Amino acid sequence: MYLQSLDISIFSVFKKHYTDAAEEYLEKNGPRSKLKLTASQSRILCTRLTMVAWRRTVKSVNFKEEFKNIGYIWTDNSPVSPRTLPGYTFDPTTIDCPSIEINEEEEEQEIEMQAKIAENQNKNISNQKNKQATLSHFWK
Image (cartoon, rainbow, N blue to C red; front, side):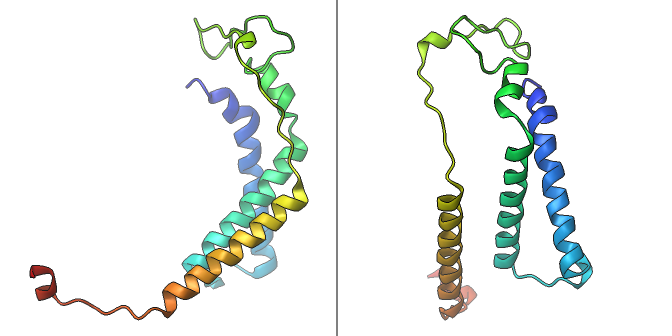
């Protein structure tokens, strides 16, 4: 219940963008009933839809302003009492919070590299001959 404000200001926007990306994919590639994806392909598709939704969310939401509105960040070093956490006060002078920068090109390369690694691992697992054990094998 304490993070409900994030559901309204951030997560709902992300979910909307994810749904839009999935619908765009289905419009381009045919109805859901005709798509036949392996588990690996489904995971990769889910990851790519998530990436598209996240990028759209980052472009459409002013995170700093949203977090300021719900009391999770502050503009000066005075103590903060988030409205979603009654009775709690946070003193920002007790921590040092570095800024986070996202390099989209490096991020895209990392995703592609990880997808290739996962694909190769999946091929290796598929190529291994798995011998089916008999019930008596487990009794030994």
